[in-house]
Image 1 (cartoon, rainbow, N blue to C red):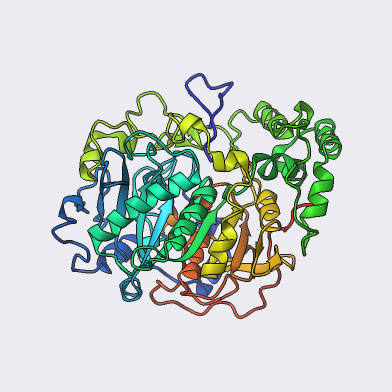
Image 2: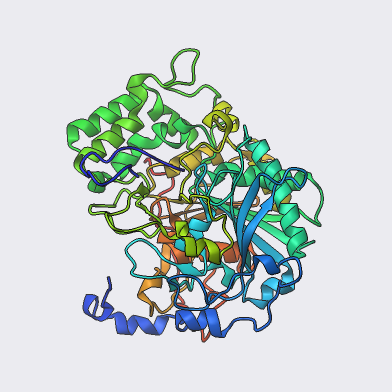
Length: 557
């Protein structure tokens, strides 16, 4: 979900959006090490365990091969990978999608013949950007001095391809012609067939994943693939989305925002009169009653198509009911660096090699071009030399800057049930500190879906989300362990909530990694206490009861 506004107090900004010594921090850390496992040094995990033979190199793929030891600023060999552009329609090659494909170092991925697709949201944001800052082999997040090997890279589990789409996103080129998600899906299927033929991936299991606005993309693309009934090219076996948009904006924002403010009162720090005015507005606009009525387990019933707070005969909210933006404006007054993606963010902005610190198009004076807009980087990954790379496109990727599937509603709700029922393998995750898309909005969406013959989740989510203990011997790859959230599964759909912001895969990489293990069927669920399947010298996990999850679902009492 792309967000743009003005920074009122930072003249150099154009638009909004440490090292720890554990033994000093906690004297019992050395004792806790006995409960952890080790990945080994990060570079060893990437390099020494690599397949010696190039798995996908052939006459058709040679032109896409990337020199793994030749990436600018990267001080290690990233291994076998391929990058470049392929057309969405062979009869008109002017519109092309850019990809970066990393074959897996894990032999299980080749034995099972599987590939995972990652699609960043926006609309119009770059998947290649999130490869570098979330779940790819090279990790260069804001505030880090240089790129490091990412021990949480998803390619340790399976073959992964990051695709800039729709046309106009990232390095993808051409003229955007998509009007709705059906168009986006049709164009992606054209690209995907070319990709499968190029890399000889016929019959591979396909897992479609993404974040944010990919709550629209991934269900429609997955559904369109399933509709082809062609397992040679479109063998969709599962889907996972982090902090996705699935419904109209009031469901994702205005209806749950007053409860969100109460939930995070200590962070947002609004005075009591403003907080009470929000509660009053939420009650008068019908949001409080709507949330209490429809965010229930089991569901009360199908939610009405006309949402509370709207002007008569229109989907536009009444001014007094547009309370999401009232909260945002107030938050910016108190915290000029307030981020809709992570409400705990504070000034100053840290340097981001992609110029997107805290979701802000910001580069300090003298920083030079962002990493993917450097000429040497473009050459290294076969990107179009004359194309300006932006993390999120400044030009629309939909005709008239409008996705008709989202405008007319109800978002991706019409197709999600099909994907659940056909695959029995859908995961939807959400960060509790995400403001741009509030977690209770996703839960409202789930409680309005009918799949497997029933409406929504029948039981309230309370199960623990467990992350195996592991050694944090690499400060750039530190991740939490133990019970870190809440999860729940019914009839082929799993929901999980974690204490983080919008960029869950960046801020909670071990949770995302575990989610991929579940998606691929390597571990059964988030309650499993088995070690990460990729680890070496894994030790036993604590043999204690896990208890309930730590993420309140729903947030309202």
